[in-house]
Image (cartoon, rainbow over all chains, first blue to last red):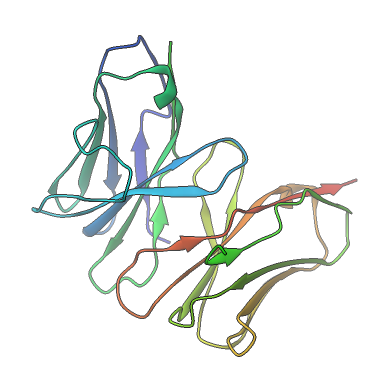
Length: 115
Length: 111
């Protein structure tokens, strides 16, 4: 299957700082990328959908000013958690699909801990 | 009612057992059905991908879809300790790639 690389795998930051998470499609052009959040022993909660070159579409209840998503190229999308607070601590996962791809491939996830 | 229902488990089986994992759904528009395996603190890994009703086999894994009953299953034969993980069902309509996930079933295969 296609490879999606997510970085960093783990980040610890102080409250009030911003954190950027990168998601790259390594062997295909990702026209659409999705960002999910997952709490312990819970399923994936879709946060937003981003299409290359356009603004992201956020799910209901997700603050677009807090979770900034950029999908500037066909191989890279970034999620920036701005002014992070302890309640933002979670496991964040990206996924990507490409032109003609019916399947969705996931990154390895980023564990964010805000102190 | 959730769109996709999945028993969270945990499900514990002995090594070599046949495992049956299931999901039910309510949205008749779902056309594509997937099973993902997720190890702790890792991203989901696509195991099986099926379109519409029917069976699909890949090694020790068999996926079944019964659209008339809105019921999908994943069978794992000759289960191994390395199969211990959380199994997520996911599905989507014909257009787009926005998936709806089940809550995941935690499986433990014991020696």
